Length: 382
Image 1: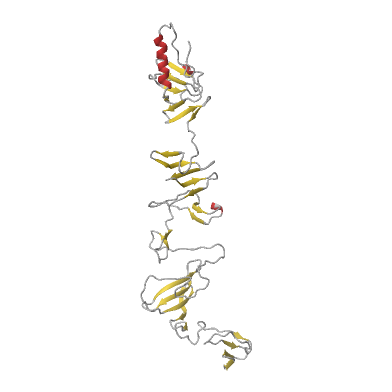
Image 2: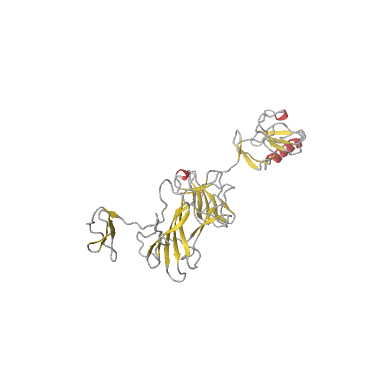
């Protein structure tokens, strides 16, 4: 009996007896193959109690009534009807929720092929919004566009580019690697900026707060602790530097390179610069003391430490007087003196001139105190 060339459904022929059988077989084939939907494509043994209309794509190494028909489409209509697929057949696999396309030898997940598209006409767009969607700017590239404008793209090397502003309450970057976030031309190999990973035991961090016009931005410490230090560490023996935008600080009051500020404006409150050793013991300290909170008067006090105890070594007051120590020395004192340079014999050189000031040196050979004022003046000490 002749069959149709594509779906192999039986023809009705002249003089055929019981034509309804052939006709009903053809209807069953159409019922199973038109808008094809199968239960799965992983079953190789016929189910024992199939329902009418149950369909499958027969898995490899089939058995029983399906033996020798791997990849065929099988449907149950009072018995199993097996149809050999042809290239181009499309079936919906219910167990996976995806379509499969038969290429002439195997069933492959149907992905579809679309044009590359452009920002103004993306390959995949939305109903009523034809210039927003996904497209490919070129070979091995992927991009997203909104309102006909490229917003995000990834090139063949995996480099991502973003255009626009990320707007939301917060953005979090998490990582299980040693560096949670790295910025730089060579990534972690040579980073320009790197944030190390955060452990559950680590709770101190940094926060950058932007400043309004005329207000400086702030680098703040975040921590649940009441007090938390901020540590800067350079590499090797390199110093830590603060740099002013100007090479010359012309007006110290308004153009400082470093400004250390105490938050209190009360009288005699100090802004402190302290130096510690590796054990955290203070070994020296410089205090800038505001002698008045209403006018610009202040003094600079220098402290040095002995066994971790700081004592005042020198003070420069608001009148530019230089004061050594804090009290008179005992006659048997061995420390706390003001030391000046010595020379072996009478000085003969012409010192550098500073208007209103004179140099002083001690002639240790002749026991003379020498002061230069246009010429060397000496006083013999006995």
